[in-house]
Length: 75
Image 1 (cartoon, rainbow, N blue to C red):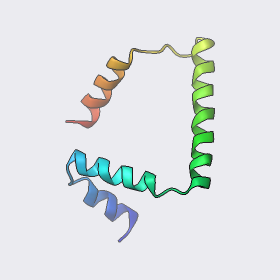
Image 2 (cartoon, rainbow, N blue to C red):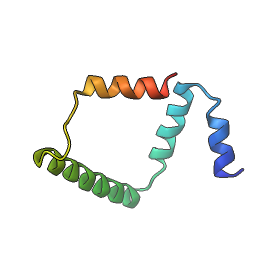
Image 3 (cartoon, rainbow, N blue to C red):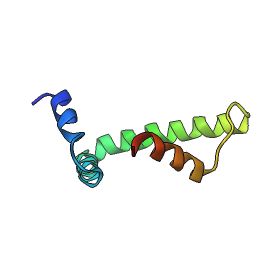
């Protein structure tokens, strides 16, 4: 099965089932890969913080962000 086929099949699952699969895939990442992922996310977080501090972006409340995500993906 190709990645595209797997993704297409997964779209037919419930949200809970999709989240279980995501959790399982994340858990399957080894320690070295996880450290690399953690480092990459740390750099993203630092960059975003700099953008906020330099007023390049305006933060929005978490509640509004969650509402926007839900509206987009939980149709």
